[in-house]
Length: 331
Ligand code: COA
Image (cartoon, rainbow, N blue to C red; front, side, top):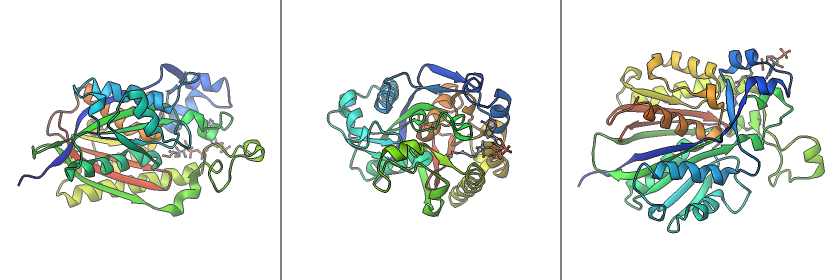
């Protein structure tokens, strides 16, 4: 009997039209284009229009993805929405997306894995394909980070943007393509270094939580930076090693886009060449669950990937969560 593997059969993305440059930010807070570029590599980010929410971005990214596949929304079996910025606590964004998209035969759920959410979602979705349970799974990493960043906190507000990236997973028996391995990690002791303190059952929303600005992202940037480099390097080395590969075998390495210095330090430690790296942080900043599918989508559309190419994805985010996925490109 042949092994069934999951593979990415289509990919799509959506970013809001509104661009906010570093100079625009410098008009609002005490910062500068020079500081942001030098410390983060970010030049601009996309921001939702008034009233535009997570499910709107998700639907547009999925429609973009499906338009490249010939697959109709009604054919989707399962919708996974990795996000930390759902439309609302409940119903899940997956249900709202299902309705707007007309994916009437799908069930779905949101997945809270922060910047690792997309890789957690890929690994989860692929299991449903590999077991033969489903034929069409959509994973859409979407975040509207501007809904939870403090516009007055210069140490966080310059770092994030809004966007969505979607993939369609289908089965294949072609041994030259598809997912090879997943390596996912979590360490809850890192939770305090990157979190949104209020709005959940621990500290419900109140006038006091709003006054204390507790519904925004709070982070210890230096600690996050240090662990991001260490863990993305370790997990990528380990997944390559246990699959009998070295970094030189990779056509493309797609890291989470949080800071260009994190990306470069990780790439240096992995001894990757610049032409192996997917980087687009300069245009979108950190879109949390969306950075990896958006980067992968853009690299594919630029002709940087062909069928059979070896690709590693790597993430690090709140939780702490981190992970790596190794695959052979299948489109
Ligand atoms: N504009 C101008 N100055 C700023 C600034 C901004 N937007 N943000 C911070 N500064 C200042 C600080 O106040 C500090 O000033 P001080 O020395 O007078 O106190 C100085 O710049 C240096 O701050 P520091 O925090 O040491 O800078 P850094 O080089 O560590 O860069 C981050 C800060 C946040 C960019 C960096 O730590 C980072 O990217 N960390 C990871 C964050 C992340 O990726 N989070 C998402 C997780 S996936």
